[in-house]
Length: 56
Image 1: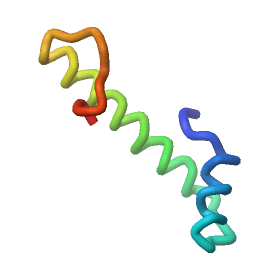
Image 2 (image 1 turned 30 degrees about the vertical axis):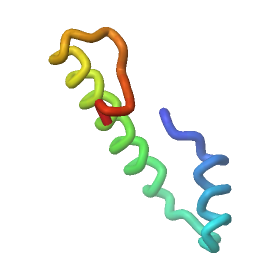
Image 3 (image 1 turned 60 degrees about the horizontal axis):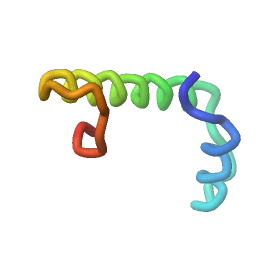
Image 4 (image 1 turned 45 degrees about the horizontal axis):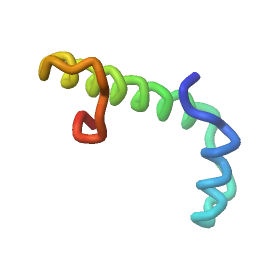
């Protein structure tokens, strides 16, 4: 698990959303993982060993 449940819930509450479905965090985690892997691929393609904001 890459995403932190309590931080996600806090962000939802800050935006007046009280509940989160059981599958929401799993789907969000999948997307975050894919974003990280895509950023790593871009950094490698550019000959870097450091992932940067521009890779996202």
